[in-house]
Length: 473
Image 1 (tube, rainbow, N blue to C red):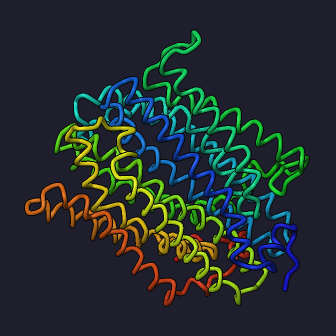
Image 2 (cartoon, rainbow, N blue to C red):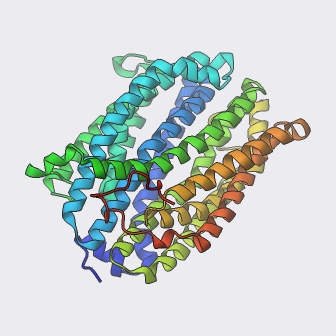
Image 3 (cartoon, rainbow, N blue to C red):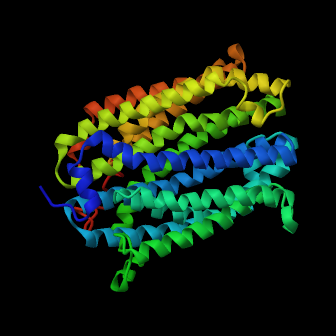
């Protein structure tokens, strides 16, 4: 067995599985929860200051934001897996190479995305069929959200690389700074508090940008002061000029996850267009319900990140005997937390929805009906995300993308469209649990019978990646 190159890796390779997963996941779960709270906080203030149609604008912009964020998450996931495997194998030099390459790639990409998002915002909003009352708000919100993407995307990739090295506590601390400042600044810029400019819905994007820039600067300072594994010192700076083979490897491994996000959010984009055909009240109801879905999905994302980091290090250290145990225990923990969140939301009735939607109106009744049909289905995501995290930890990026493509575009979207004449808007809401459960079943089949265990370590052939190599099964 190879000796891990970092103390954190040793704990992931030799320590108890469930307690280590929980310790690693807790800061992630708390971070995700606070991010959701920040999004909810912004939506509440937006609707209180600008009216209920601002909620539709926020929902529309978020679908696009998450779609673009998927490309960055693909790069970050590939880099995190390579770093985890390298630390498990005892190769700190490879960690530096991956960190430099990933940062250079994401910074260049995010600048292009920011400029494109600003220019194309009107066309993107028009394509969703956004109700007329929300169009101007949605365009402005999307434009200013686009301006924040370079700093946010750079921050996210740094955080994912640190988590790949087994450190979730440090990113948590600095994410608290980001979230806390954005929650403070958003209402101040919305209302013009203390003589600040009153920016309207642009305040949400500007607040996030300012808060993230401060958090990013503090995080970079911490990385260098404490010489963390991803810090580039002296001669390491040359890695910001990426090696072509390594750049190609990260792109090839990151592209499937980027496509996955585009396919997933693209299906939401299509379904959002269908929702908008029912008018502004239904659009607002959907936006309110979707705000609560985040709280059921959070545990899946946090546990998946923990499982991916632990599995990657165990694979790098040739500890395959622990991989199935990590998958089983991680999925069970994620299921338990997701179930608890779902039960809590149902038990609160319409109280959470009334934060966004006025009581007594048709939108609130519609939002309640949406959640009765759709909310429970997201529990299945816990198993899907956990199993995908495990197979991706060995570089198998393409299969999860194909599975999501099938369940989103061959199952979910046709389900909603074909049954709409008979079920009305209920076909849209039922399509969500139908797609989530389908993804879970297919993911389990691939985990059990797929060939993902046979893949070599990600950096093994980095100096000679074949031109016709697959993207990664």
